[in-house]
Length: 181
Image (tube, rainbow, N blue to C red; front, top):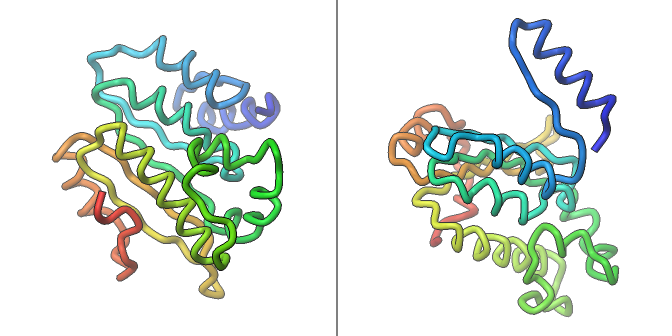
């Protein structure tokens, strides 16, 4: 969303000898721009690292997932959901509308906070399931004081990618967030 940040990222990549193209704007729009320029038969990988849940727009994920050979690594902020569920659920134009579009019809806000948060994530998982990924993996990342910060969620349709994920992921003993999908 911020051109200065985008330019700084491009400069860091260039200083390391890489080449980058920046896209500034809402995730839904930039995802469409990027997908339109990619080879539909190529192998693709996207890492979405948003500031908060609102910026992890489901429509952007859906757009990227329209490519047959797309793997996604998503940073999903546990902290944002924990801190802001009350304000998000009270808002008429909720950030959760972007993150999990069907949450309003599936989440009972009268239940305890942990159950409501779990329901939001369950709703999001059910939306992901519709994208026909054959493998999903997740790792919970904690801070230095053992606070839950975010999940790294891996989505792929490839057994090779699944095997690679299994070899490189940090085995933390955490229950798989997306089990049962």
